[in-house]
Amino acid sequence: MIRYRALGDAGEMGASAHLVTVDGAALVLDAGLHPRHRRLPDYGPAQAASPLAIVLSHAHMDHVGSLPVARRLLPRARIYCTQTTRSLARVALRHHVERDRGYAATTGLLYSRDEVESLTFEDVAYETPHALADGLTHLTLFDAGHLPGSAGLLIERQGRRLFYTGDTHLVDRAYQLGARLPEAPVDVLMLESTQGANAALDGVEQGDLVSTLIEEIDKCLKIGGRVLLPIFAFGRAQEIQTLLARATLSGALPVVPVFVSGLPAHVSRICDGHASRIRRVLPHVRFDAMSTQSFEDGQGHAPPPGPCILLAGSGMLSDGSLSARLARSLEGDPKNSIIFVGYVDPDTPGHALKAGDREVAARLVSIPFSAHARRADLVEIVRRLRPRHVVLVHGDETARLALGSLIGAVMPEVKIHRPAPAQTLSIALSAGP
Image 1 (cartoon, rainbow, N blue to C red):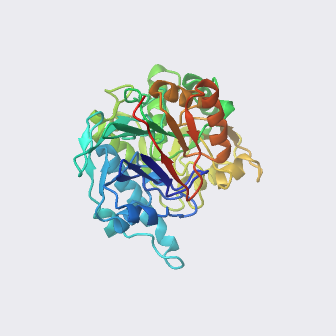
Image 2 (cartoon, rainbow, N blue to C red; image 1 turned 90 degrees about the horizontal axis):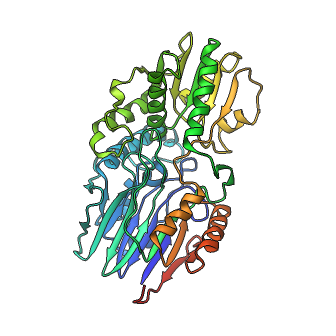
Image 3 (cartoon, rainbow, N blue to C red; image 1 turned 90 degrees about the vertical axis):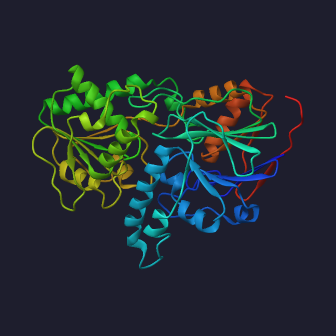
């Protein structure tokens, strides 16, 4: 018997946390925090189940942001992840504590810096089975291709096999190679469904996105403009830095100053430290060898003069962020460009700017880079792993419905589950294949 319950958001993307029980052994997979609403998972069912482990798929806050709370409530559960995720998760959690101080006077801190520093992790290398404390449950991590250190999680116990994709990307990108998968078959596949309803990405190739970005940057620089790329520090920054360096070396872009703000630059340095553990497209490339300059997050910092490229967080122009201040400084000049290189939430200042809530002279461009698998690739994951059951997670209800229909049309023998909030899903498995 395999049981599943969403501890965090079900039917939407936010605080990812899942309780799975495989033949009596309970584990918590991810411990996220909703990035805008500070909404925590409900760890009550996990406390009742007394899990062996908390296993992290990667270091984005919607997957690790409530980890100190989970540790407080589940003190006996060991924390497992890749060594790269351990390093990046500490940075993400420390950064959150500093930002969270603004809420302390009214709602209190969710957790303290001391709680972050006291976390202990057990490192797990890719594709190396690791026995958990009960000696009967084994964990194997597979590179998910989503973020440096990201992993899909294979849990095996007494012949049962459950695989959780985490956030995944099958196709090679500028910095990272695509995801690897375990051998088929698995009994249960927990499949992310972020792009499950996004037909706009069908047929969009990574190379086309890169070409569009380079062309837009080149156009702006040639007329003496400055380019702002609002970016996420974890993952997207490393991808964009890599492709900019490649374009400059090849002559596709002119040599101009490239500025990278504090947190993205710090994350890139950490990735250099874990270079041997990250499956990279260009193994010899290091960020510390790229011709970039630090651009600190100090209040009131004006953009440098002359043609240049600015990489700054946040990726959605969150209030008070360096990217938001830079956008305000640059938007009045028609020579400048503000280029969004990924998803922008409808409830953020970045989306308001894109939607024309205020008139700007600068050129606004959106290029749909994504670290999440396209829906055709999600179906391909199911085809390769041949699961008996698919549990659709990490997607809104529209995405889960659309993806479930696509899977059902190709593999009607697969049982599709879209668990509701607070629902415990019980999957009885026969002895046969």
